[in-house]
Image (cartoon, rainbow over all chains, first blue to last red; front, side, top):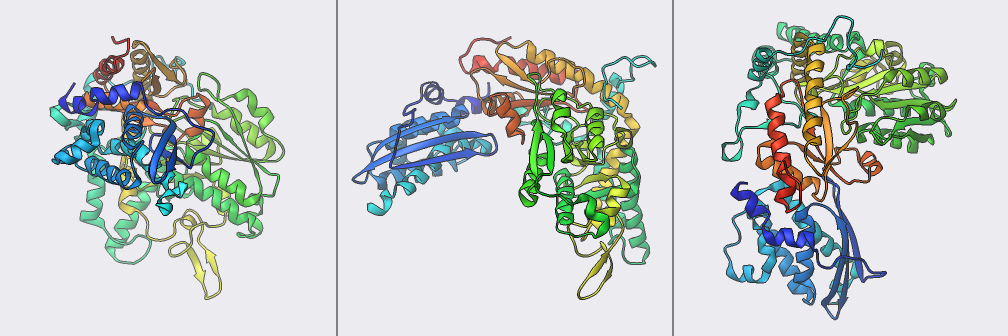
Length: 153
Length: 442
């Protein structure tokens, strides 16, 4: 295996893909979004509950590659319990990481905030896989819009 | 004509490509020389998506621009004449390659555009365009369009849309567990209301080659039009569209060693002559007044606007290149590769083929799933070994749904593919499950 492969499939990613967090949909949710990656048919349905401007819970069901599944699992861990402004900030930081072409953000504060999501740094080298890593974040943003919580905040 | 290529011929084993001939073929494809990340040699097993191009095709395109570039079918200067000759010579080469007359071959931007051309011509006829002659193409609510579950979206979605526009009903025949079309469903599915039977000559997913004969026979019994998706057959098998007896067939240049941006639609002459135009504008007309227009005879009637001349010239060169190799030899070589690909996949634990597992009536296109590993991840590990395969649904979502999978990985060979490349593929595939901490391996 080459080093870029090892960088892409870090153990953190493989672990999240194997034992994803937040899986399983509820009967209802404040906001729900279904997103597909049309190039490979990956899908996610993501539900979000928001209480007093804080993400109360994220639940999801999906099928897809290890990058997409692990990314949604990490997203779950990062955003539950966070206020909407911080969630949007995390989403923006993660997008910036994906656009760094594998170089990382060179920003210690950002690295601290992203936690396990730093493991996805190597994904940025593979432009075809960036969409996989962003699938869950796209769904979260859409679900938050549908929840109407941003207008209430 | 059946497309069986496994049966021993009376003349003995069909000629295949010898080692020296294959080496010479590979030398014709500059891109195959390049290396990938970390200096790895390229093992290109994605020819089903698009083929690589031999130097003669690149040269033909370049030569057109360097020596002959001018507007075709207009202008009386020498350059315009030479450009027109090159354009029409390419049409004749491609037509002859698939056993039809040049006047029956319409240039399209790709195969998708060819199939849409037929669908929209039927639509326009339904609206009364094309006069008395086109009435035979008009559809009415309750008419039926028949497709198969095996179709590429390009030969499915245009018929769905035509059904929505006209009130016709879309029906289809299924696929069996081996990925073969359910011919036993054909007789029940073709009714007196069937107006179009659109089907693939060879699946881009399962690699199964369709026996065209029963489709044509069933369609003729009720006077339905046949539309053949020949994208995967024309680059890999000897194809004689007149002998097959289909009414229309579409195929693309870029899958048969030619350029992108060009494809061809074959239409039986009397049908093209009766069909109303679809895209309208310059070059496809006879007399234009401020209120109405009469249209040129086919094929120009269907070629509005400036055409993709250099690409057409390139596609003509590709047809000649393949014809000179001999499509019997190409098919025999790829038949051998199909066996190697199937053996490779069968030798790795935890890998399952979606499609026939024997080489009878089958292309060297093998789609597979690796237990516990998503196709995208499979493709990434293969890519790390320099092996290029396609991952995803290959524009055939209903077929994937039929097999209960969202995505597969697909290895497809072409005339330039070697035994050694398939050995590299096998070794890389054996490493996929172990890489993800699953059992198996070589």
